[in-house]
Amino acid sequence: MIRPTMSELPVMWFGLLSLVAIFGVATWFLENFSEKNELKKITGICGVISMLSLLYLTFTTEGI
Image 1 (tube, one colour):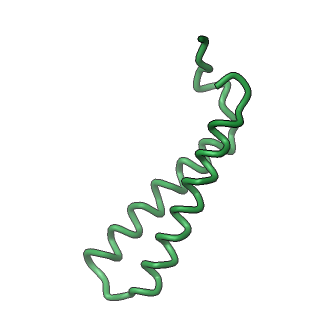
Image 2 (cartoon, helix red, strand yellow):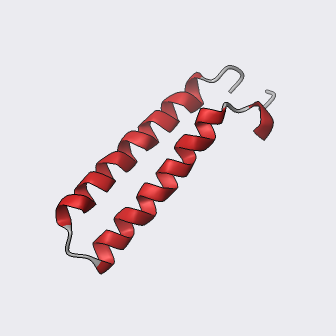
């Protein structure tokens, strides 16, 4: 089975990966250093949506 190289992945994939990382760090920061529970919930939900989108894109990309 041939795996695609990094240059063959869609640009959207890298954008979603970046969003997952950003929302993950933001949620961790809000959990440990802030009392803003509503914002923590929003960033957590956005992170889950980003991760599910990344998972869908990964499994529907041609050749993977």
